[in-house]
Length: 341
Ligand code: SF4
Image (cartoon, rainbow, N blue to C red; front, side):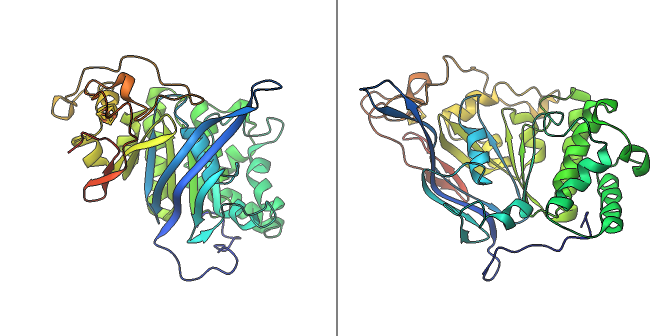
């Protein structure tokens, strides 16, 4: 592993390893919105009953428009936010309501790669200190061991020669190099799981592919599971094993990349796919009708299927009244739509 001073950490009292690193069971994260003295508060349902699992060494992309709740979902999964309801399991252990003190082990095992690498590092620190800091906080190794781990991490993210980059300050690096430093920092404590929240959205198109390739390589080399949060189906297609499509706080379709993008079942997935640019005619996705309207408010979403006001095949008396259940229509491929078959 990258930072050799750290042994893999298991949660306390862990039993045999679960096949899934992460499991969500009807997970909810609601925020109370103040509405005045006598009107009480009403919930903003950012995550509203999401059920999914991420297997060991697997990458799941969660894709949705802005405001769909995907970033809140990611932050809840690594317990930067406490769930409102449902269950969150890590390695089979229920961590839904564990305290910050109980979650110390999770702060090593689960790391995050942010959208903006510049905002996540102290600009006054050289790269060496930025990478050493997690080891110092978690009291890992002596100075020499930490130094060795920093050099290995820089090599893992292809910042060579590592001594050259270790002495640079963030403002001396390009956007792509800064994101490589952010990835190296996420690797310092030998995580089993990484949340990557729009990690390439602020980079030039030419750099995006190389960063996604690096993440894929890291996933294969170290067997790390990823939750990749993005609004971009094209990058999800290249980086992920499975894709979940999120709409208004709920998962509406989830399955293997080939199934979801090759033969989508949900009208929302089909509409999202119309935006994927693909220069190869053989790979061009066929649905081109676009997506009219705006995503709904998470404070007062539409009744029944939240997508029904925008859905081209919505059925009155059904879709606007009843919530569609998630159903497995193909092996490991689930969809929440009354009319999908
Ligand atoms: Fe459209 Fe109805 Fe399916 Fe919702 S349940 S996606 S409104 S067809």
